[in-house]
Image (tube, rainbow, N blue to C red; front, side, top):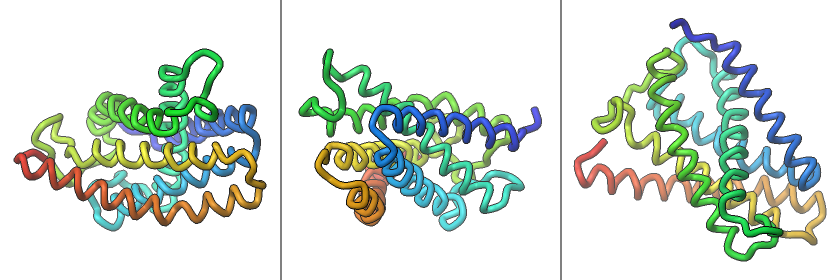
Length: 209
């Protein structure tokens, strides 16, 4: 099978636009922009670092611009679909992530878990098809390093948490919501690095990779 990166990118952008339009319809344009910043930009920056700086994996033959565009829209797609699936599972009748008390932290955790389960199916197929190549060899699951699944859980959970907390601020103006969404990138990046180090160190401590 020869990987078709053009179709992969186009389909990812298309699905991300559906997620964005859904959020715009449900919560308004301001929170759609906030979602793009908090989930797309935050996750894309961290994933881009993993690909090009730490060099854990690569998309064969693809430019840095292609990679950033794909992971930017890809994280919007994955985070959005998993988040609203988690909300559908956890929310009581007549409630949602805005007004049900404990969903602000329950939904992010379940969102991360759903995303990891999804990646358990996606990653082996994508690697076998040649869409990306891992330079760190795992010892547990199809030679895919466990740091990949840790990364998915951390990024998706934190992005969901950050956006839901902003979404719940009903009295904020559009300007304040967007400014806080941009400023939230710093603590999100710091927390993701710390949490990833802790989880990956725990995995290495028990001899897994």
